[in-house]
Image (cartoon, one colour):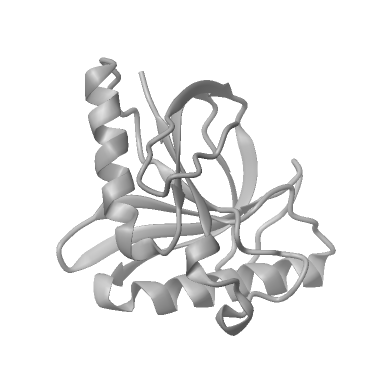
Length: 167
């Protein structure tokens, strides 16, 4: 999949995906506490992987099941091989298969709203309807080491993929 060089470009593609087994942490959190909650969930997932000897099969994702003014229902997850088992606050599940529209955002997340607006405009222009909650894939987080925001690359180099199931 091509990643645009212009951080403002919306390179949207439609593709078919197979269901992806995951381990995730889902919670309803105040929007003001979202970054901290995501960090805690990612550390809990990483610790679960280490404790159970599970290897991720891809980068972590964040899926917003709802996003309100004050609160959001957020799922932080990691793709894994089939058969991975959850425990405690870590649940086994899957990202849905089917047709998705996918777009890339390059750079810090303070402009992520622009990428979402571009994806929504593309969906409308191409007569696609969202079919459930989409998710963000954080290609800039390396799960070969414990997640630590102080060691993440400069935000200008972040590659975030937006994935939206469509019908």
